[in-house]
Length: 348
Ligand code: SAM
Ligand code: SF4
Image (cartoon, rainbow, N blue to C red; front, side, top):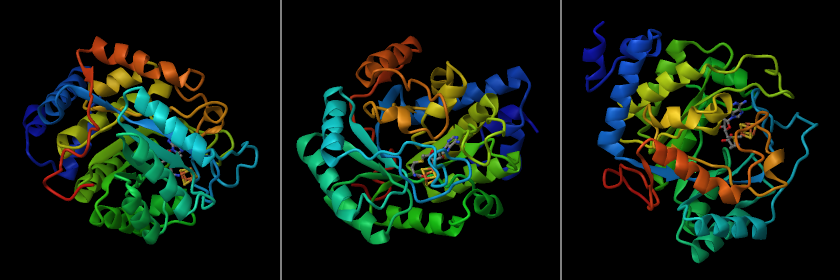
């Protein structure tokens, strides 16, 4: 196959995606990265959007095989932030000049429909912020109530588009359900984010190609591709982490295939490689999602160990990111960074 020709095609087949994901020659890989950067520049410009994450609870009723927050992890010290703490943290984030807040947690029904609606409403009353929810699979009526309370976006990764692998990783959940939730969220006007992990046990490069095509089919507003990192109190405690270079190739191919979509340089990538955020921004990413959960909660949100920046003061985060982003000639956006597809389909 001719690399240059493939990199400039409008639509890529699964075979072509697999070919790109398998590039190991350094020069070929750099061609791929440069092309992804060009596509990012054309569709997203130079701005990097920050999304400040508040991890409001580490309780979870699910048992995803890879995740340190899984219900069966009895060693984790669990916490729930109070609604007031969450609203106050959103305020702090807004004052830092960050225009999206991501409310994230395990699947925790103690945060019921009304409580989450109240938190969203209060945040939106007091600050000019976009609100993204990342609360796992919840009820369709709940999604509707939270939309009415002012939520703008929902992030629910499909994790893998291979139904057999999906059922191995999530014994209680089904891929079909996840797809139905994502479609419903989109239908009722959420901007939707999804994506998958790279390097999960049993996963092949063909599976990852399917993941990218799955993201295209979903017509996502944001697609996140992050490496798997093994977590001690899980059945995958002794498995190897996802490969950094493969993750970068997935992000680059994701950018070339999906074009007008937000792609984050993930914290997991930065955890595996100190320069991960910059590397990610150079291969198609245009989003960074710093963890701005206050202490003592942030240390206990142990999806996997040694998360990047976990011991840093969240208040210093924006300045630190700004230096890194400006060092590669990019700049932090002053807008909410809504879907780039607005106008093509409904929005908040
Ligand atoms: N409970 C919600 C959910 O599952 O969508 C949100 C919180 S969950 C911790 C957020 C994301 O963490 C998941 O979508 C998954 O991709 C990622 N994650 C979980 N365990 C991981 C691991 N061991 N390595 C890398 N990412 C992981
Ligand atoms: Fe719970 Fe989300 Fe972790 Fe699964 S990935 S165990 S749903 S926090």
